[in-house]
Image 1 (cartoon, one colour):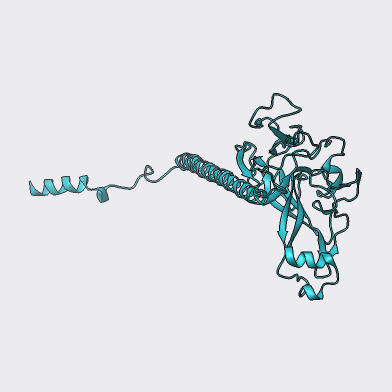
Image 2: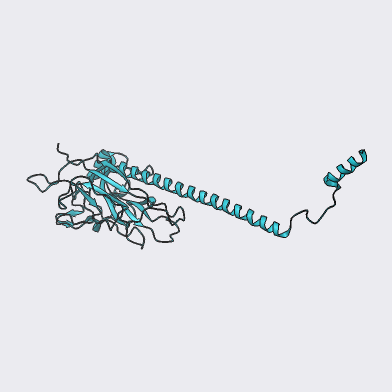
Amino acid sequence: MTRKAVQTLLKILPFSRKRTKGYGFTLLELLITILISGTIITALLAFVVDLMQTDRREYARSETQREMEMALNFMTDDLREAVYIYDRVEQTRGALNPLKNYIPNNLNQGSDPAVPILAFWKAERLPYSTTQQLPADINSCATAECKQVLIRRRTYSLVVYYVAKNPSNDPKWKGKARIIRYVFRKYQNLPNLAQTNGYRDPAEQSSFENWPYENGSPAGTAAAAGPGTMTAVLVDFVDDPTNNVLTQDCPGDNSNPNNPDYRRVPQQTSQSASLYVCVKRLGIIEGTNEQDKLNQDVYIYLRGNPIGKVNARDVQPLSTVRAGAIARGVIDKKP
């Protein structure tokens, strides 16, 4: 009885069986396993890659929007120091030629011309930088201008913001467009007080609204480059200026195009829709030909586009950001 039980047990145990051809994987089973594993891994990799691309797109969008807001803050801070803001840049100023005829138009170096958007005069401290020096003292001055400079220690500079469309495949600028800030100063050399070529003082030789005219004739022009000028790129990745599907109207009553509350610069949306401004129009003092001496306010509209930071066809322009600024300075203000 015991012997039969042992024999039965030995038959049940695995090591008692003879190895047959049924053990291990066949080639077909191995191929099926590889196919299933590859499909799963490919799906997981595609999911991870898509997740990373989505994260990159969202980061590029948020980073571009942050850059637009920083550029907008810089421009509004700049505007608060303005003493006169032009509500006509590309348009005829009454009987005078447009201001754009007297400011640089070749800042984009042979590509599509940069479009002037915002132009204003501001008072800048002298010297312009810590590397420059003024005359030592009044006793060393040989001219009345030298004495005035040492007393006032400031002069007027013309500031112009442009939007420039970037050339395709540009190695330096990757976005659709960029903003250029241009400054035209009175003096190109201190302490010699050598005046910049083409400069006419709007407070003494001309007027702010009619610059650079003197006695009914143009007497100066802003140089494109050289001593006394400064050109710098404020921000890249601005949306295409010709994309005019997302524009907004200027505030106030603009039903009368000849006398709106705010003038849009540039007037035509086809010139620039990604960066434009609405400038408070100054009226004419009753009984005179002079403009009102009031604080001007401006609304700036700016739209970015992250294309260039990420290579994605489905990336869309960002929402337009808007900011307002009131110029603190006014020449000959009358309450």
